[in-house]
Image 1 (spheres, helix red, strand yellow):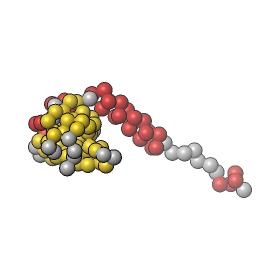
Image 2: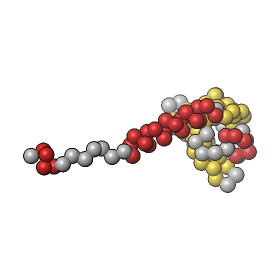
Image 3: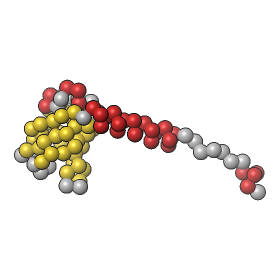
Image 4: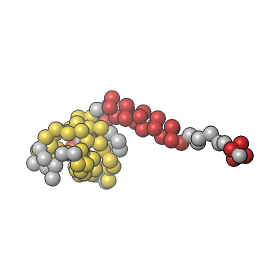
Length: 96
C-alpha cells in the first residue's frame, strides 16, 4: 500500500472504468488502481501526469499537470526520433 502523502503519478493505462497509475513512492514504483471518474476529466488518458494526495490507500485529490505532460511527451518524442535515426553507413572496403 502506498503511504499517505503527496505524489506525482502517471496514468499508465485505462481499463474499462479503471485507471492504473504509476506512483514513485519511497523510491519504489508502485501501481495504484482508481476509478477513472475520480481523476480530472483532462487527465483521463495514458501518460497524463497528475499530482495526487493519497490517504489510507485512496486518492483523495488529483490535479492534472498539462504543462509537465506536454513537456514529457516532447522529451519522449525527441528521444524516439534520435534513436530511430540510423548511424551513417561505412564501407567495409574503406577500412582495409
